Length: 227
Ligand SMILES: Cc1cc2nc3c(=O)[nH]c(=O)nc-3n(C[C@H](O)[C@H](O)[C@H](O)COP(=O)(O)O)c2cc1C
Image 1 (cartoon, helix red, strand yellow):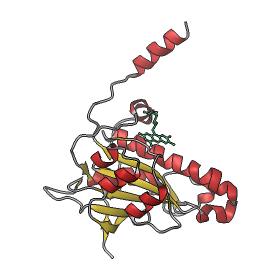
Image 2 (cartoon, rainbow, N blue to C red):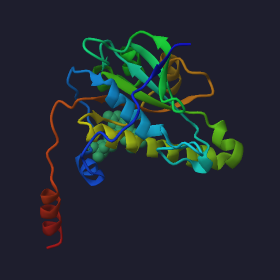
Image 3 (cartoon, helix red, strand yellow):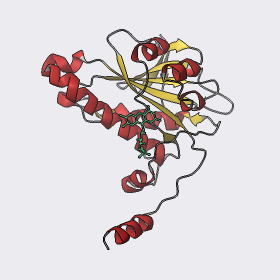
Image 4 (cartoon, protein in one colour):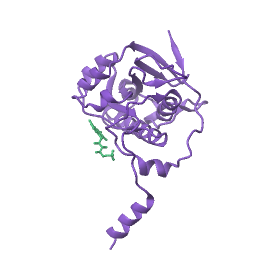
């Protein structure tokens, strides 16, 4: 079994939470530039990494701490930069929170197939990587029954998705939460078992255009709206 240990999480940005929220936008046009491994590490850790080593709690809240989600990273060719001229091998990787590592599940660049499964949304193929969030419903329904399926798991996914949005933004990347795709086709493309249901695809890359919005713009908007 070949495991890639990700760089250990650390304080890496100087942007505040409110600035990241202000600047967050769904991004669908990406530069053909790789993402750094250290940045991928931070995005995965803020999504679902361990933040309480004693109890094993994670960066995102989860109903009853059941943690029903599995995160997969679809990596394109020369898409994740490790060190001088070295890149992560193209493929599909499973994120393993307890060791903060990646396990290669499938070799090769499957971004095109993922784009087709996502109803030809071309940003899925153009982004260097996508994170696919899958749910194993039984982990939550075992305790909460149908409410676990219809409410808790989708809420859990929303938390993870927002953390991916915000950390990506803070690091200068962009992403978009994609819910429109054929579930079974995505599952086949990334090679997951039948008890895992893909919920979100989140392509991540450097935005082609920068977002320019300030708190002054919001003030101006509110001043006008309140007249
Ligand atoms: C549940 C959900 C599903 C979405 N599915 C898609 C999608 O399939 N394709 C896409 O381009 N954007 C998708 N989006 C992104 C929305 O279009 C986007 O959030 C919305 O236009 C608001 O823009 P903003 O995220 O920049 O604030 C989805 C968002 C959510 C929350």
